[in-house]
Image (cartoon, rainbow over all chains, first blue to last red; front, top):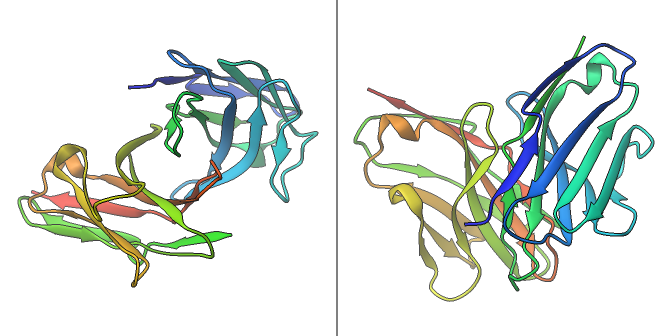
Length: 117
Length: 113
């Protein structure tokens, strides 16, 4: 089946620094990728929709200047958490749509746990 | 817009017993329905999906779900659970024509030996 890889799986950073998380579709081209945030023992909250070659669409309440999303190629989307603070600590998950498939299944990455000290 | 309600936040069940995890949804358009499983510190793995056709859907690891349009439900079942089924289970809905998923809050299944 289709594989989506996230890197890094774990990251610890100091408050005020920026962190980049990569989401790659390994064996398919993804015109659309989604970024989610998951707080402990809670569900996934959609942050933004990333479309290859265009600006990301952010959900209401998500700061686009805080969470920079770049989808420069059909296999890579990046999420950069800028000037990270402890409240940004969370589990970030991406998903991708295989452009070859006409219907709705999305493939999920393994997630990236961010801890901001 | 769509919404998903998972009625049980936690379900403890003894090993080899049957289990049902409940999911109800609401939508003004036709939908696709999914169940995902999440193990600790991991991403989501697709268990099964309903896109069209037969309302009884079989997935991986012995799970199945039935789409009931009149009751707007998509309950997940397994006739005999194993310890390895202990995980968080998420029901999700996708409106036809959109690739965005709306997730329920999740149900934590704990299998007791």
